[in-house]
Length: 215
Image 1 (tube, one colour):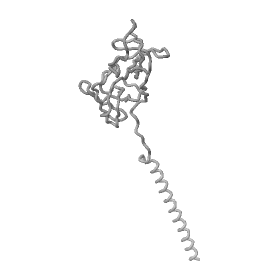
Image 2: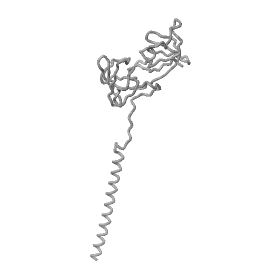
Image 3: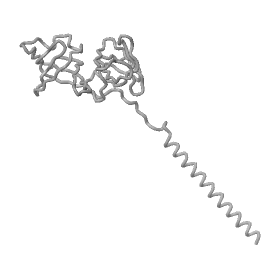
Image 4: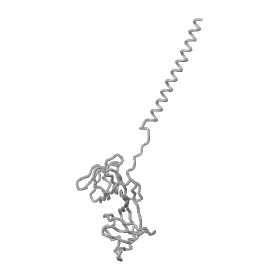
């Protein structure tokens, strides 16, 4: 009888040991699964573009905050997307409503490419007030008025759009034509690539990037 009890106890002990072993193994498996699913290195990450959308093939826009401005506005550092980017402003037009100084939001319109924080292959052409919804646009029409610092075109639909002359591409030629009447309109057909700035008071200004003869 005693022998029978000893054998029974031995069988129970074996069953309990096996159960404990399976529980530990399952816990380890679950633990490893959680660790793999929460490991940030297993997630796919993509670099966020620093360029705003636009339909101008050559001109691009970077929006950021000024961190540093060089002497005589020859250069500036802009923070965008967590990166500090140094721009050479020689030859660029600065048309901001606020003084260009640290913490001011700006839109930098440039040609070329920015790789990470390297802007050595980018050429800024225009620096304007920071506008999150700014985009490069194109419009065609006939020149109906031009003055020393502005010109106006009339589109095929009859809309009149005024632009600020800012030393953009094409304005050093006779693309706007010569006035034919007292209104200073030449009737020349042009295509304008431009961006628009909306100011705090609600007014808007259109800045041309390129003016060329319309085909």
